Image (cartoon, rainbow, N blue to C red; front, side, top):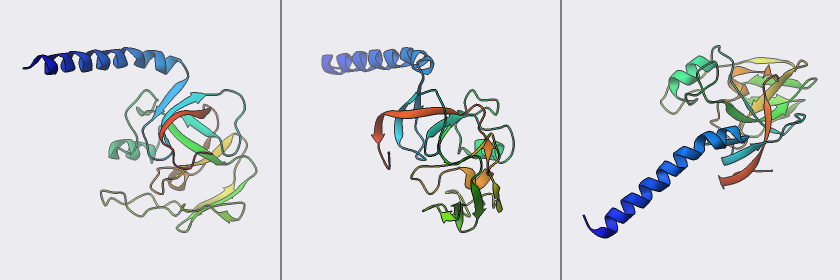
Length: 182
């Protein structure tokens, strides 16, 4: 092995070890790394404070179907949430008092169909997706969430409203696939 390749290997190894050593510090700094295509990929910073429509939020999915199936199918990464998954990162599209309809045409909030919100019938592996047909008014302490710019996002069109408790607002910090960042 040439001196160049030995030096390259040592440098690459040192950088890799340094990056691994920084992961715990990043986790405790309020930074979240998003690798899902549901929202722009990159680092998000916890903002604290109140949560509003259009905000990015992280949350642990509840330990129930269809989240268990999503974890089994690989839609969710394994992580530290009670379900055994990594926290999800989505955009809030409806809060308390908003009227919603979720059906084969997509998600309507207060009568307005969200663009690109029609649910997929199958996932990329050809397996059937949950066919949620529901409507109502978002109750106090609940939210409806969607992927920001990915029609194949695993979001409220497959599981409906979620508890707002435990959701944490975040803001984009460093993105490498910006998509539709507001």
